[in-house]
Length: 497
Ligand code: CA
Image (cartoon, rainbow, N blue to C red; front, side, top):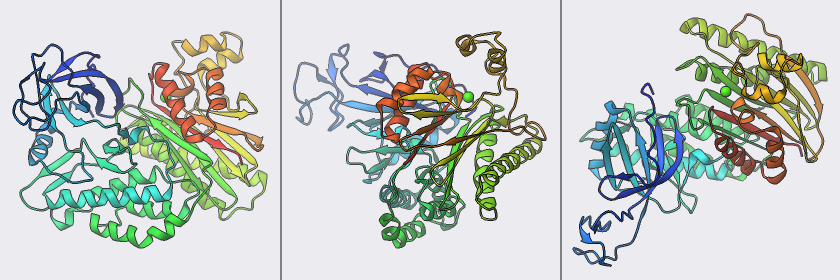
C-alpha cells in the first residue's frame, strides 16, 4: 500500500444516500472498517432494503413499493483507497454473485477517492480480532468452507489478488464468509486451471497463523499449503477431507496465544510473531518488531521469526538437552537469524533490521529468554508482573545511568533509538535470561507497541483479570488501542501448566 491512509469519517457523517457513520471499528493494512446505519433523520424518505425502492416517506412504516416493513439496518462498511484497483471490485460486485460462503456488498459507493463496500451487519466479527490459536476442527472447517467459496469464484471467472485474514468475516454461528475481496480479474469464463492454486497458498498462510503450537501435523500440512502444494481449491479441499478426522481428533491444551495488530496510526504491520514445537521437550516462542519502512521491516521481522524457528528446530535434533546446550542453541539461532536478515538487507539494498525476543521452554519448566532490541519479555507470577528482558535502547541506558526516570523514558523524543538490532551488524550480543517457571506463571512477549501504550501496572492488572490467554491477548491489544495505538502491536502470552 503506497498511498496514505485518508482521515477516517467521524461518527455522524453521512455517506451515500442513506448511510450514517456510527463509528470506525477496525483498521487493517489498506482498509478501514466502519459500522453504519440507515437512520438518517435528515432525509424525508427511506430506502427499502428488500426491493431497493429508494423513497418511501419517513413516516410510513412499510415500503411504498413492495410493502415490506421499513426497519433500521446496520451495516459493516469497508473503505479502501487504492483507486487503481476500484474497477475490479466494482465489476465483481456488478456480477451479483450469491454463495453461502460469500458476503456480497449490498451497495458500493465511491466518494472522495475511497471505495466503500457495504454489507449488512448482523453481529458478525472480524477474523482480525481473533487471537491464535483456533482449534484444529475450526481451522479445518474454515479451510473447507473457504476453498469451496474460492472454487465458486473461479467457476464464475473471478480471481483474487490475495487473501488475508481481513477478508474473513465470522458469523454469529462461527462459520466464515469472505468479504471485501481484493479482486484481480473478472472474466466471462471460468478461471484457467493452471491459475487456480494462487489463492490457496494465501489461504494456507492465513490458516497457519491460527494453528496451535502443539498441532505439529496440522502445522506441517498448512506449511505445505503455503508453499503451493495444491494447484486448486478442489485439490486442497480433497486433501483436507482426507485428513479431516485425523487432524480434528488431535487436541491440545491451549497454553499460549498470539496476536498481531497494525494499530490505529500505522499503515503497515512490520511486527511478526511465531511459535514452534521443537520436540516433545522444547517449544519456542518469538516476537519481532521490524524497522526499515515499506517492504523492509515487515520482511526483516518475518525472516527473523522464520529463521529462528527453523534454525532452533534443526539444531534441537542434534543437540543434547542440557541447560547450557539450550542456551547456546538459542544463541546460535539468533546469530543465524541475524546473518539471514543481514544478507536479505544487503540483497535488497535496504537498511532493514528487527528486534527479537524469544523464549525457549524446556520440559515446561525452564524458560530461556533471549532478546535483542526493545521488544520485551515479562513474567507474570502470582498477581505481579516483572520485566525480565532489558531494552537495548538509548533511553534504557539513560535510565540505567540515572539521567532520566523510567517515566520520562516513555515519552522521551529519542525513545525509538535502539542500540542493538538483528540484521544490521555482523555479530550481535544477545542477552539470555534463565527463568525457572512455576505452575500458573504467564510469560508475555511483546513489541513496544504494547508496552509503549500500556503501562506495566495495567498490563499486570489485565493479566490478573483475564485467565484465558486468547481473551487476554485480545484485551491487551484493545488496551494498546485505547492508549493511542500509535505503533504496531504484537504479543504472545504463554501459560505454564
Ligand atoms: Ca514498534
